[in-house]
Length: 103
Image (cartoon, rainbow, N blue to C red; front, side, top):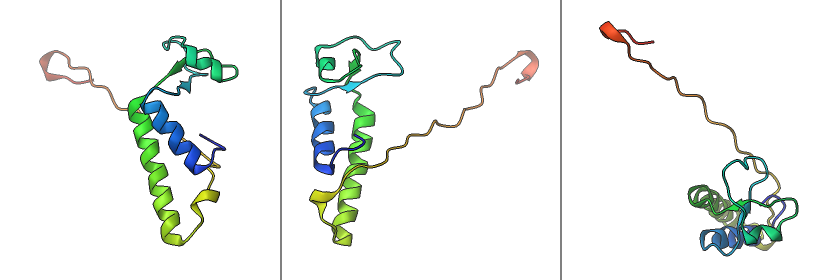
């Protein structure tokens, strides 16, 4: 959605939820299958329709739109210029051993 206008990004994510458009997978391509909707994207043959991440990003876009309304900005001129997703912190794994020991 980077580089899209706010309206186009919201319609794109709603279309992903309705399986009308797909999200191309370019990096993590070990699991997703190939679909006909991937022909719309250059350099991608594998696509998916991830529901939970799409809903979260859609919520962020709606929040940004409401913030722009409160500040009095023109909503039609808003564009997504930067998107960043960080990796979560590693969880510590526990191994239970005999005699009540935990490694």
